[in-house]
Length: 420
Image 1 (cartoon, helix red, strand yellow):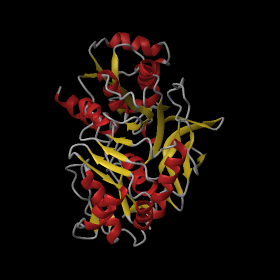
Image 2 (spheres, one colour):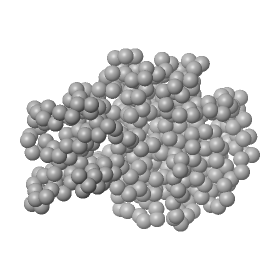
Image 3 (cartoon, one colour):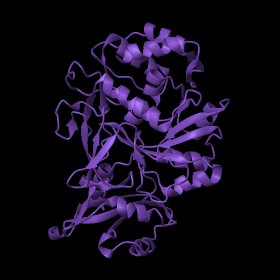
Image 4 (cartoon, one colour):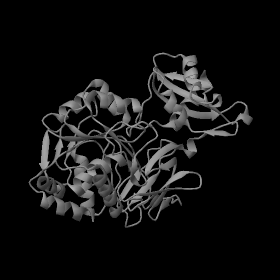
């Protein structure tokens, strides 16, 4: 189904620009890309694992579609999963980001992938005359759905950047009159501070993690460019999108449901997604949270006036003496402190077991003034929500998907605290 759709598109757009690999210095029209895909040798075995940021990723994808093999994209250096083949009607495997625990594998049909691409293009207004500047991971659900599928199924050209570093982005954008740029919050901050956001970017998108109001407002103030927040999940693709043309006033806001997406809340207040783009099943172990066009997230949310506001994750909530608090609530206030560059808040077992958990704030700052930060939080939060433990670090490194793993930070903190 996917390969047939690609062939029809390639024939219709044969002489039009499709793909440029900046590092290789090569470009393809849709017709040339079709020929290259036809000539590409498929990987041995029934599972194909494209990696990297070059045209080889695209060609391996086309070869897998052509030969009826299952695609399982991997990050550079990531080892293949030792799992059985999914059901015969499934053609794609995604891996979750493991930001809150162990990574899981999700199986998709071709129809589900195509539905996600349709929703994204229709909602965001991706255009053939505004090529995607590809600086994010092609293997991650975000990059595959926003860059690879729009190219191969909807005809949105793609410029592959060799690296998301500022100078590479600047060079890749040279000579283009209009571009679409998808990034993650850490990249948007870096690009802004390095002053390399191309002036020809017409559509700016951020996903993978919460984008701070500070960065969104700073970019808009400097260039008039609105960064549109995109919220989605590996299990179901795109969920909501912020179409507004001015910076948000509420950091919890993630926009309205995307094209063909229906949303509701379960009894615990967590968002439930209904759509044709929802994955078939977790693989090889199924879960009632996913399947039959429905995905039950762990994201606590509010639905107001057709918009979605995220209130944290149910499984991230910290239990402080029987009272629950979402770490995102504390983080959103702490990030407004002038000395805080980035932060992650999480709970650890309290030495007094009856108190449940103790709140830890891991903070990137050049000014380790714990008391100043406490007073800043007390001005907006009740005392019991102010962290009891503080961990000042030089940097917090998001993974290749732009996410800060709360679970990994917690484990690192507990490990380091045992040695102090």
